[in-house]
Amino acid sequence: MAWTWRFEKADGTQTEPAVQPEEFTTQGDAETWIGEVWKDLLDEGVENVRLFEDSAEIYTMSLRAAAEA
Image (cartoon, helix red, strand yellow):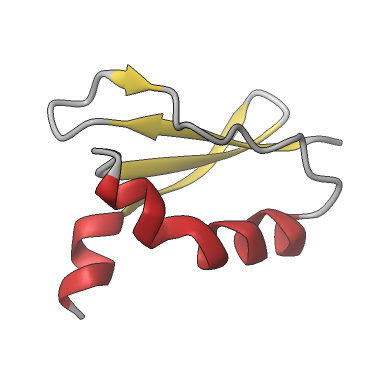
């Protein structure tokens, strides 16, 4: 199984960050990576991320909300 992130602007359109992550083999690896780079992604204009396991969406997360917490 592959875990991947989708990156979105505030209006919901898909965007690609400067540093593209590889596919992750576990959910924990994917979440660790996003935990390390979310501030950089937000600076690039990424507002929301969606985590997928293969083609199934697992959840959506707002990076802006994380910054305000």
